[in-house]
Each structure stands twice: as structure tokens, then as C-alpha cells.
Length: 339
Ligand SMILES: NC(=O)C1=CN([C@@H]2O[C@H](COP(=O)(O)OP(=O)(O)OC[C@H]3O[C@@H](n4cnc5c(N)ncnc54)[C@H](O)[C@@H]3O)[C@@H](O)[C@H]2O)C=CC1
Ligand SMILES: O=C(CO)COP(=O)(O)O
Image 1 (cartoon, protein in one colour):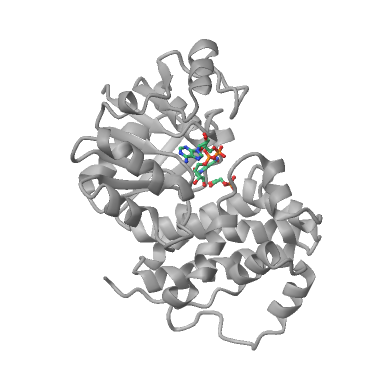
Image 2 (tube, rainbow, N blue to C red; image 1 turned 90 degrees about the horizontal axis):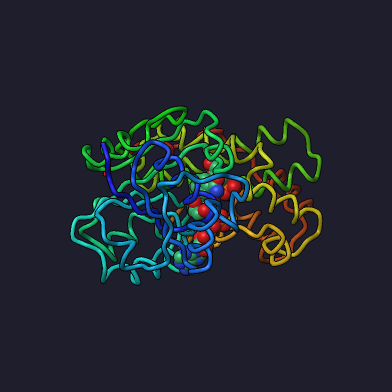
């Protein structure tokens, strides 16, 4: 099979996915925001800003010309969540009707609390949407380390298309029809990973970390249940799988951001020192600022928000979390109500 695929966004994840597809024989264009980055990739075969040591396949070409990048009908969207809406508006005039669009970003929009499928439906309603998620650090995918992910779409032919394109070598792709669950799992785990970084820096211990991951999963599930996700999605790659890889790995930017905050850095300083996007710092705002509409209790997310945006100390939040009223482990709202 030989398709022409454009990957929007030449950060770590866009570069890793473009490289994977290109290694498998696809013609891939990597769209870069900055012309000098595209030029450097084409001249040196390496991305000067992300995954700098990875040799990119020869057939991968980069461009910063958006019209040229849009001249196909199959796309991966790998720009950070808060830029998705403005990016799609910019690309829309060049896009054909009925494009195949696989989103690779993980987050919720701060201004609306929306998932990316909802943003895409507003801006490009004719797009046939899929999402790829699961435990997949770009650094490992770029080195062809064994990785398993899930692609979700409400259209069976779309999930099959992306599975056929991406499932090669040590990159195994499962499919799902639960777009809502896969999106929520990927977005919220980034917030829990910030908490995990904080807990790790505070040396709270293995018990605390396991409690955090489990209770973090409970928050993911509560939110998912309310939004109409299938509960079993959270037992899979986009749920517990991604929570584990992000909460236990120093490759995770969200985890590293949490550690930096617990060391006493400001949020701005921590973000600057990271030099890459830690989506959890934004998604937590979407969760807390839209808590009323979301209608679920998210104590860990709220604690992360107060540490990042209200300068509360992690230890005071830990004490608050532990002094809450005792309750059942699984509240009644964790059940699947089909929508
Ligand atoms: N890095 C990873 O291991 C993984 C990342 N993701 C997700 O992929 C998304 C992108 O993350 P990374 O590539 O890791 O980020 P990154 O921080 O490595 O790179 C961000 C990229 O987005 C571009 N960008 C920023 N604002 C933009 C705008 N307004 N318009 C167009 N492009 C813009 C930047 O120029 C840069 O190329 C995030 O949602 C992240 O959660 C998902 C799975 C794995
Ligand atoms: O989503 C990821 C791994 O699946 C990457 O996590 P970070 O954004 O925290 O690095």
C-alpha cells in the first residue's frame, strides 16, 4: 500500500509518527510551523528541535507550506490541544471534503472544556475522525521499541484504515469504537501524571503512588461515565496503560513537570525548563474551570490545579485529600449509560 499522508505538527510525537509511517513505505509529509525547521529536516534528515538524534527516513519530507501540506486526504493531527482550534481554522480553506483525520493530541480545550473530536466536528464537520492513544512515549516509538496503542473511531472503515497504515513492526495497533473513552483517558492521565511527579519528588512511597494511580483512574472513570464512555476502555491501553506509562516514567513531560513544581519551581519556570508541551497543566484548567458542566468530583485534579495555579503547597493538599469523608471505592455513577 502506498498512501500520501501529512502529519501536522513536527514536535516529538508528530516526528515519531511520521518517521514510523515513512519507515513502513508510506509517502509522508511533515508539516512544520517554522520554515527553518522544515528546511533543516530536509537538509540534514534530522529534526533540529525534537528527537534530535533520530535519523529520519529519506522518503520523509518536511514543509512549512500549509497549502502544500493539505494537498492529500489523509492526515495525522499532532499539534498541542490548545492550538488545535486555531490550527484547523488556518488549514480549513485548503482541506478537501471528507478527509481522514487521525488526532494524536491528548487534552481538553481550556476555553470550552471540549474534547478534540468535538472541536474537529465544529470546524471541519465533514472530516472522518479517529484518535490514536495509549502508552507511547515518542522517544521509544522513534527507536522502534515495542509499543501498543489503540485507534478509536465511530466509523469502522476509519479505524481499519489507520490500523492498516500504522500496525507494522513493533508498533501494534488495536481498534475501538469508543472515541469518548479514548479521548478522556488520554487527556486526564496527564493531570494525574503531574500529581505522580509531585508525589515522587516528595518521596511519598510506592503505596502512595499506587493509590494515586488507582484513584486517578477512578476520576478518569467518573468523568468517562458521565460523558458516555464505555467503562472497559479504561481497563485498556488508553486508560490504565497510559496512566502507568506516564505516572511511572521520567520520559513523561507531565511527570517531570510535577517533579519540578515539587522542587519549588514556578509553573512558568517548570514549563520553560521542559521546553515541550505538558498537556496536563492545561487540561487541569479545563477540568476545574468547567467542573460544574462536567458534574463530577475530581479531588486529585483539583489538588493539582491548586498547586499549579493557586500556589498551594503539595503537603497541605495531601493532608486535605486524606482528611476527606471516607467513602465507597466505586461510587454508583461508575456504570455505563449508553448515549
Ligand atoms: N511526545 C509524546 O511522547 C506524545 C505526545 N502526545 C501528544 O501529542 C501532542 C503533541 O505533543 P508533542 O509532539 O510531544 O509536543 P512537543 O512539545 O514535542 O511539540 C509541540 C509541537 O507543536 C507545534 N505547535 C505549537 N503550537 C502550534 C500551533 N499554534 N500551530 C501549529 N503547531 C504548533 C510546535 O511547533 C511543536 O512542533 C500533545 O497533545 C501530546 O500530549 C501523545 C502521545 C505521545
Ligand atoms: O502521552 C504520552 C505517553 O503515552 C506522553 O506523555 P507526556 O506528554 O507526559 O510526555
